[in-house]
Image 1: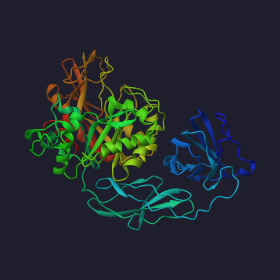
Image 2: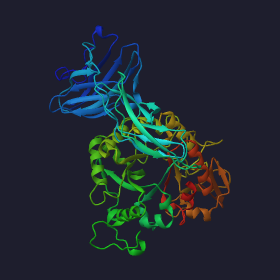
Image 3: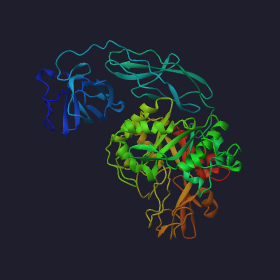
Length: 593
């Protein structure tokens, strides 16, 4: 039960257990786990004391003025004045008979909850539950996430109900084609180049259904092999310096015609907020006519210059091209820990920056590249397994259904690895798609080797680490319940290499990283293809032994094979790091589609 402030004046005070008469009912018990005067930590445990599964739960209570819950994990939170409602996360919709589930929260102020109800009934099992009188609200925002010749991926905004939404049905015309508790579905087995009309209805535990959503008409693609739809390339703002790669090069290489989305990297994360990464490159650098997308030079007094203005011009030339602003990355992920302490404030700052009136028309959403939630990258994060979910939930709430919200995530599928450290399944309901970084599995940070392909498609005998390959990564994410349509295959437009190697085949010893133009141990494909041509393949990836150097990288041939594999897995498409690594005529991107 939820107790009043007097009961909880003592730190970690426990609540009175439900009375014996509550046996065979659904009950809830909440307590403060910490109390530091100005704030508190707490947890609630819901017990299904019945002999039947409980399809969804809703816990309600009131906080006194001056007290609030600031963060919650393993539950969804809604607030109306001082009234708080907590509901089960979609990845934990069913509570088995005679079992329990818990969620936690942090708050500010001296008080605590009163008037606790679980699914409309008293939390102590006394009294009668409220009758479910209302049907769920109509699902809104039905939208296309991806499509191929035979598959359509759909998403929509969650409905609400006076007791609780238990699931959704997707209809193709009058025929039900999918059901589930997620706010998304992947419809397969469709006919190429055919128009279909879809609607969605929400259901509650009493059997009531909402009115159908507004219809969405989708025409499937023409038949063919390859990835299912999206082709996303990262454009790095620092590329305009030493690399001399500009937005115009995306056009002249032919890449703009192949891309569906560009991820602009990176914005910074500082002080719990989204901030500018490089103001000069982003919006100040003046472009002459020769480097401008439309051949028109910037003027000294125009309100927006730099990459943002060039991206605006590129989108004008290619109206279907979408651009997302990516925040974080390897160097700037250290700020996400503080951001996770107040996800709503972080989301607010990101929205205000992305939608700044100077460049609001440039961006179609936000991409988060947190390396890595509750795990170690350049720095180690200890935010907890729910931090990533809370962050993505806040971003989706702030950005709404009309903007894209995506995330680049770890590809470590090893047992107990980074994919096990955060709730990627729970967060998936808030993203349009994930970009698992299925590259950089191996490299010369292990200076003595063994040599290994940095982006193996599959495992192979002698691979240095099990779970470090694309197929295992995708399989693990799917096993969590994340549909393939929400997953993209990652490709590297670069190679990683060692020096001091005498063995041609993978598995050889080395003395350190091979020299690279910008950084030791890494080189762009456009330079490697001539400098150290491939002379073998392993696990779907090319490798090359030249002199005492050993490199692994993707070629047009291996990218073509990987794209076919992605199509067979029903993935939502492919993405790559990053555009400047390709040749001037776009050899690698042409191999994707």
